[in-house]
Length: 127
Image 1 (cartoon, rainbow, N blue to C red):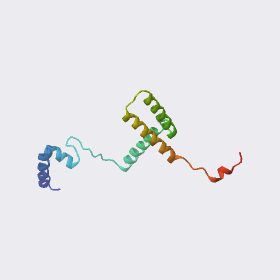
Image 2: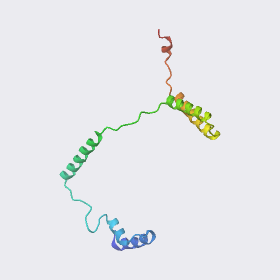
Image 3: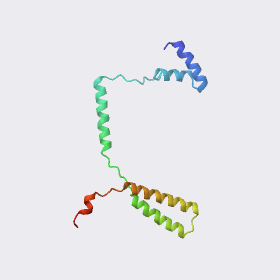
Image 4: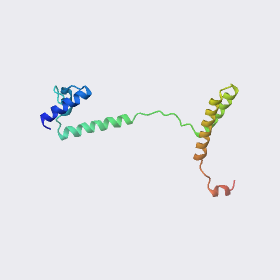
């Protein structure tokens, strides 16, 4: 890029975005005038840096992450049934009852879709 083109582009962009031409020039060149953001590293330095980062990542992965148990479809259906019973007993609005029924139906559909079909030979096994 020649300097006159860069200067012209800086002025056009800076008037549209309210960025100073100096800041834009620093950004275009990829370095700050006070310090060089590009580090001079040898191949050995790069390998050491990457090796250190890999070791740190492995240490971070050793932490145990506690997860909550996943709610089953049947548990959701039971919860919505109980919620519907409570809502009907306490005079909840029709819209809220309808919402609970929709959610219960959604859980029922999910349970139905996730059921595993029995194999035919399971019906003929001796008890």
